[in-house]
Structures are given as C-alpha cells and as structure tokens.
Length: 261
Image (tube, rainbow, N blue to C red; front, side):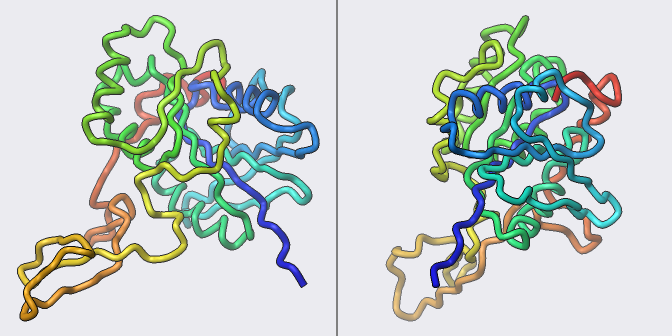
C-alpha cells in the first residue's frame, strides 16, 4: 500500500501591515493551477483583511502563548496550505512550535516566505535584528510596502544580506504582486536554517575545539568530535532564555492591528 502524499505547507512570516494576505492572494491566483485546493491559515487575533475575499479558503488557528503551542489542524482536503504567523508574536517562538506542529499534522514544508514591511523597517533601525531572524529561516524574502522608502535604504538593506551570503531569494513586490509567482512557490530549499531538515546536521571539531569541514584532513593522532548542530535561534542559556534575542515588534506598532496583514 502506498503512503499518502503529505500536504505541502508554506510558512508565511511578516509584521502586521506588511501585506501578507494580499501577496498570498496574488500567489494563489497567478501561481497555482485551478485543480489545486489552497487554504490559508491565519491566527485568531489577526484582523480581517480586504484580500480575504480573494482567498479560496480561510481558516483560523490559535497561538497558546502560555505553552508556546499552536492550536489548529490542517484543513482536510486542502493543498497547498499557507500558514500565516501571528505578526505581533515572536516569530522564533512560532517557528519552533510550527516545526513540531507540522510533523504532528503530517504536513510537509514547501517553503518559508517572509514579506518585509520596508517602511516599518526603515523607520525603526533597532528592528533589524528581528528581520535578521526572519531572513535566517526564509527561502524567499519579498520586499513590500516600499512606498515612500528611499532607494538607498532598500539597496543597503539588500547589501546587508548579500554581505552575509544569505542563500534565500530576494524579490520585490509592486501593487501586491510578485513578478514570478511560480518561482516564489517552487518548493526548493534556499534557507540558511536547518530547523526543518528532519535529521540532525553534524558539526565537526578538532582536538582544540575548532570547527572543521567534514572532509578536512587531520593528523591520525587528532581526535575529531561530531556533535549535532543546534539551531542558533532556538538555543537557550541556563536560565532558559534565548541566547539570540530579538526585539519585541509589538512595541514598534502603533495599534493592536496595524493595518492589513
């Protein structure tokens, strides 16, 4: 008996007001075939969006903040599914919970898409660490809400990641539309993070503790130690706090629901 195909799931990151559902409507309309049955999962606290009427199926999930738990289920018969994170909640907490939730649901990650609110980022330089975290987990970064944003800022924002040789794809959004929806939805892994790989990625160290390449030659007397690579954004200190901390984006938003998501 053949194993049933897993439901492809896209994880959608971004701040409130970044236009995530408008972009999703475009991706669904222009990037999917008519025979597909897409569904969009939105967190219960997110406000209604004008683009919701263009989404073929919209369901709600709930973030259980006390336990860091996702309450909700993949819609039966749907596929692909677009899972939109709660924009005001720490994205790292949600990503860590999402990895376990997706496995329990029997879904398969297609890609992580990050919709950037460029105007919000330009106005608030301290938020760069928040954007860094989202880019770290993303396969595709979509630059949206660029109205009134200086071209120089956009160039410097892109260069910040180019200098780090980030493998993800960067695309611009204009009028809620991307240039090549099928390219954006292509389920090819381009993210730096290994959080969704399913198997441990091993890191090798020589006798002095220095990290070495798996294929690197060492002296016969040298001991090589292999340890599972830890996702840096998931790592916690002895007190249980994240070792890589990011700003609370809710403090930079002017209203509980800062416009369309």
